Length: 153
Image (cartoon, rainbow, N blue to C red; front, top):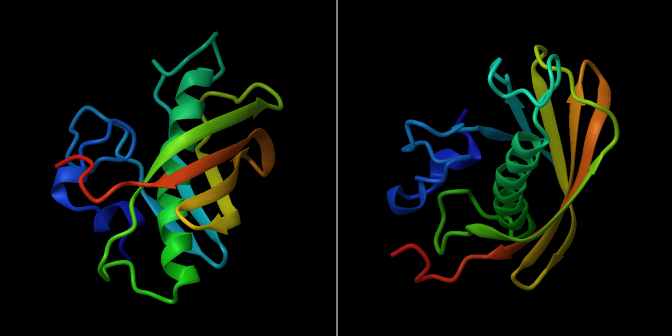
C-alpha cells in the first residue's frame, strides 16, 4: 500500500518532515484508513525535550506534515478521485494550532490520527491527535491550503 507522500511528484518531495527524497528528514508516511490519515513515528533519543519526553517542536512538525498529507487524501476522496489523478492536490499549512495535553513519553511509537472537519474550496481543516499507548498527548487543528500550481517549480 502506497503512502500519501508516495504520490508527491519529485519537485515536491523534499520537505524535511514528509519528503521521501530528503535523506536527513523525518520522511513520515501517512496512510488512509477509513475516514482518517494515520502516521506512525518512533522518535530517536535525540528528539528529547527533557529526559524521557519528546520535544514539542518535533510533535508540531509531525502534525504539520501529517495533516497536509491527510488534507490531500481527504480532498481526493471528497471528489471521488484516485490519489494519482490529475490535477494533483497538494497542500501547505495556513495555520497550526497545537494543544499539548500532557508530556509525550520518549520511547514508545507515536501514532498520529487526523480527519477532515471542513473541506471548502481550496481549504481543508484537519483535526489531528498524537496517541501514545492508546492515550492522547497532543491535539491540533491545521488549516491546510491547496498549493498553487506554480508553487515549487
